[in-house]
Length: 172
Image (tube, rainbow, N blue to C red; front, side, top):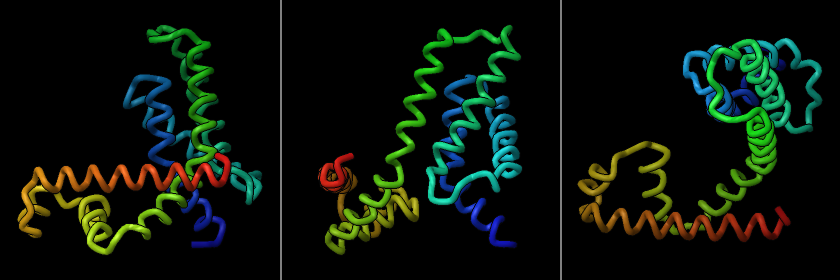
């Protein structure tokens, strides 16, 4: 795979799920959303040379997805919209703004995860990176499920505070 392809697929993989959720939020139709996502990806690939490296890839991707979603809504006016057009415009704006700080939040999460003690890091890895069910973690650790749920709640609280502080320090 050439450098352009590698770079594109890395960047696209980082926004794929959010783009699908965004499009689904706009058009309220799973099949249409998946089709629109494919069309969006095709346009992104075709225009990838126009994307300026170092700028916000998420914002660029979301603007293309927004245009595809609005085109779909225009072309399918018989499809009942759940909200007025202004709402969809505002929704598009909010979704695009939220992607701007997503990479900063992910970086903050990575830093905060490293600040956890070793046992907590292992628990988080088991549960969220390896997708091990709580019941299996309970069997593995010998801790009751209720205790694990409380402990995970404590860990999530610590991570939330750490991420908030990190973002505040960056003035986000």
